[in-house]
Length: 334
Image (cartoon, rainbow, N blue to C red; front, top):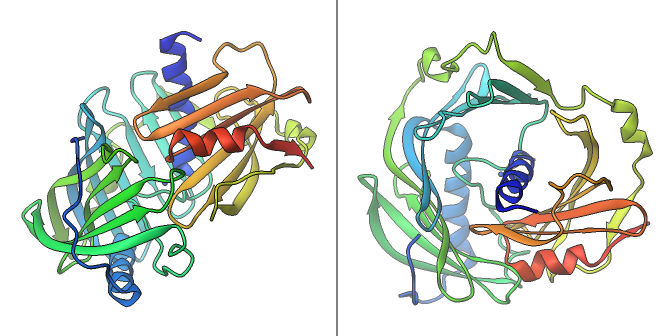
């Protein structure tokens, strides 16, 4: 697979993986380990803020020197939760999220992709509130308060206990509770991914105009997930994974259709309560874009291979390579 094909393939799978959602660092200056009650207080506050606040902001997101700048508008009102993401560089791609759908507007290809389910991933990233299931695999620390985007924040450090997951550093708005900054840390202490607000404005009510797409898409090609080759979904069999990293459990599974190609695909998701991994099962084909072997985009690692049963498996997750490799090697037909 060429580098360009591999990058395109990873970006396409990353879109599905997130719609179902730096700097070198050589050590942490930690305070004493925090109690579950202390950390749960801040995570609960952050969880509520992620869904209930009205705000407009600008954040940077990416890996090492490959950063993207985006504007986000988030609203919670009588119409429910709505969100608009607009890329401030590149081709100006947009994502409009409601409780029922996700619409991706791609000006570079003059196309619109519609997913009729609310994604599990969010910006800012969401975290679980209860720590009882995380304590076996992570340690938690409260650190000093710091400024982010002009706001005082509480810093929380989450360290993994093995090589199968990343560490996290969180900066939570001290007053509002919104997650304003997060670092993802690998086992060498390197920051492999970051999310950080550079500007944040809280509002009582978001003007309707801020939630509308900048283009109408009248001359665009529209692709809707599940519209094409729907009969192919019935041909997919039930798959499972024999070996999972400690703490990972089945989160969900679904059968769906790729919006552009109409190819039927089964997606399995696994989580340890903090990190998530997706397994994509699809028919084997001669398409050169199918990933064979390993690849990565920043903190996201992927592994793909053909199985003897005539299908192709691709495993993608915001986890170290060891995790996706273990799962990829143990996919089986139930």
